[in-house]
Image 1 (cartoon, rainbow, N blue to C red):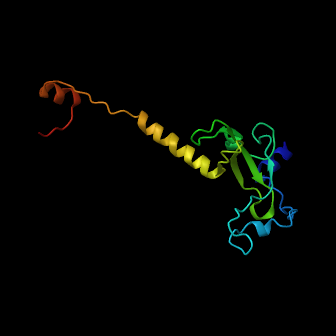
Image 2 (image 1 turned 180 degrees about the horizontal axis):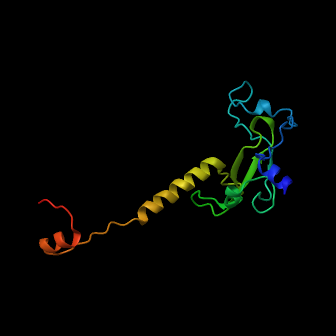
Image 3 (image 1 turned 135 degrees about the vertical axis):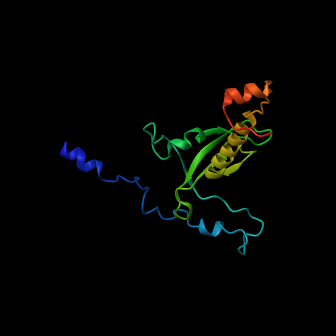
Length: 157
């Protein structure tokens, strides 16, 4: 019982990700970040290496939180693309831990930051909730004497 009491007073906090992110394994990665540097004219910067996300902290898996569960495999919403967007996490130092969605269809290639996708989804849901609210007009007909007697309120006309 004493152990339970002591442990309940300690803030467990959040288990941190790796405090020392891995070093760049890709030698030319940093040079590929800037497309306006000499020799890179007209070349699109390539994204750093990533790792697939598997599991869920809520359901016992690893690498992401419960609110991210619906985004592991989500439908791509780009016009004429019926593929799925998959959740990834950057593993290189400069963007370590940032999460993004990328369409698995090579021709589509849609990219979206996870936080932006969640914010957009919440805004859409809020708009849908606002549409559900309906204006209702109620007409009540009664004699003014009945109104005063029934509501025992102070009325002015």
